[in-house]
Image (cartoon, rainbow, N blue to C red; front, side):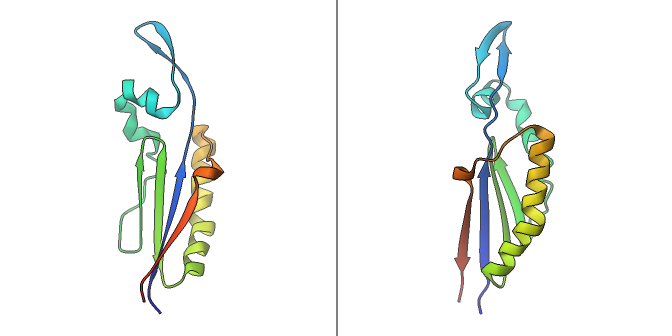
Length: 114
C-alpha cells in the first residue's frame, strides 16, 4: 500500500478597527490590516506554525490562511493524527488569539501513491 498525504487547509477572518495616521480606518480582515502593518505578519500565526517541516509533517501560513499536512500510510491514520493532535492545537491557538476558523474554508485533501 502506498503512502497517503493529507492536507488540512483552514483560514481565519478577524475584523478590527485600525487607526491609520490618527484617522479611523475600517479594515476588512487581516489582509487589509496587514497591508498597512506588514511587520505583524510573522506573529499572526507564530504559535500555530511552530512545527518542523519533515518528510512526515509540516505547516505554512500566509496572512489568514493556514495549511497543515501530515503523511502516513493510510487516510485513516492521517485523519487520526489530525483529529488527535493538529485540530486541538489549532483550536487552542484560535481561542488564545481570539480567532475563528470558518468551516467553509476548511478542507481535507488526500493524495495517494500506489
